[in-house]
Image 1 (cartoon, helix red, strand yellow):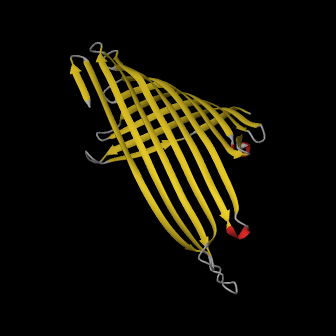
Image 2 (tube, rainbow, N blue to C red; image 1 turned 90 degrees about the horizontal axis):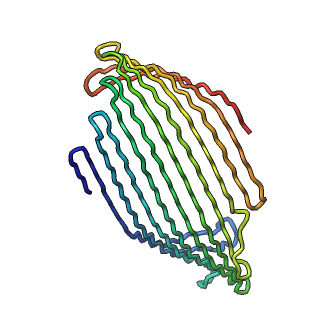
Image 3 (cartoon, rainbow, N blue to C red; image 1 turned 60 degrees about the vertical axis):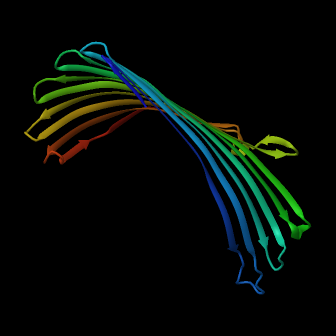
Length: 319
């Protein structure tokens, strides 16, 4: 961790890393005999599995704050976390009955590789206009990316059906993308010693894109598995404004009265590759949230709070 303070400048940074491997060997014996049949035919399942999990993760963050004047200060930060996980699994399953030799066997070996990155950042400011009026604001963003690659393989042998053998393979890739941007601006005005008025506006924008694709091997060539492949896209925009009045009504009691307005735009689309069909929706609505809150300080560490809020929704467009 690094930290620097010099005059009006403050800089901090930190970095962390960890890695490891988890090993999980497993041995299972299961009795699948149907004792209601005559004669009783014993059926025993023996399974031996070996799983390993390799993982590593990095995290880094830095922030800079600077006082431009006695009234105005600004700051900015950025952080990133990226992780890789690899899961390997191998399992042998053997069914035995009257004879010691196996009736059938199933061998599976799977590999799963997951990569994730999460990038966040933003900037903020605080401006003291007068001794009773303060203006603050911020802009923040988040960008999340994930890629999950899967390989699944199995080999089945049935010795009762003339050494019948069947191989099965499946390869998949899952993609998750999430982007979020939000901005807000607030004003706080001290009217008197017992009255304080606050208000502000905020906007947030969310974009999500999830895609799932699978393919299996047919006649030596990889073929898309359309019944498992999908793509989902989603957008959400929220615009909000609020006003709040705080009053000290007694030595230990305070009351808050406020009103918040929100307008939300939502749009989504799901594409199914098997039917080549799109399922889309779009919705817009407005919400109004009046609220009242009263709190009472019983002591320095105990506070009672009684909030009351009402939500009013007015849909405007829905398709």
